[in-house]
Length: 145
Figure 1 (cartoon, helix red, strand yellow):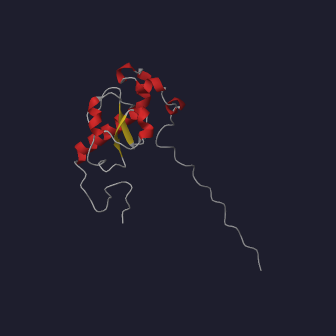
Figure 2 (spheres, helix red, strand yellow):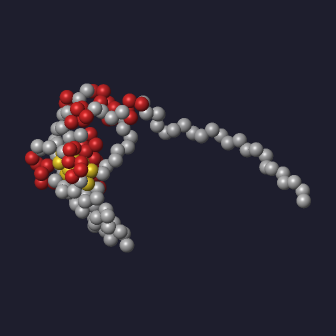
Figure 3 (cartoon, rainbow, N blue to C red):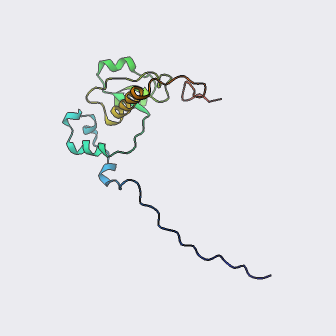
């Protein structure tokens, strides 16, 4: 048997640059606990600027500040281990997640909860209510079939 000839080496072009500039390391450090619970008006402009640079957010749950009386009508009974964050008013896995969007959002609501509720509200204004569908379970925990 003869020897196998190897194909000529192919040089690939360099990969394209990323679509977004790299994030500064300060964006990755979460704000201090005291600044997260402070009203927006009392936070430094630096923290608000950093929030404007966030390109992704996990929209799983939303809380309103403890003591904010209107939040009680939306209170969720599950998720008690996170009650230190405030009154849980929305969760992606709740039966009412596609029907009830707590609004308005009060001062003092943390950034993640505020932006989650704002996205929900604006998407409903833009696209309307989500219709029921046999292709989507009524509950996040139900199987599709």
